[in-house]
Length: 106
Image (cartoon, rainbow, N blue to C red):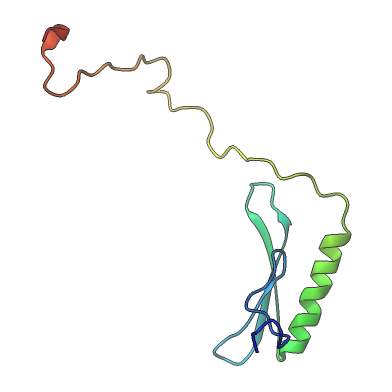
């Protein structure tokens, strides 16, 4: 029997959270709920003593995320400002090819 027919999945679907157990025995869950103003993903963390509790908390966050209508479409965030002063207004330097004679004569 394959894993799918046995009712188990090999991986989570897109948009679902990540759930794992840490070395100290507590369960942790992470879910992406949107995008921060700086363009980074907004990931929320929940933890509990049992996996079932974490699943409940994560599903709650996912329902709240899916119910929101105020989400703006994701757009690229420009992370850099203007070019540094020493680059502004400079003309590019033309370089000759390796082995080419100066002045373009062959």
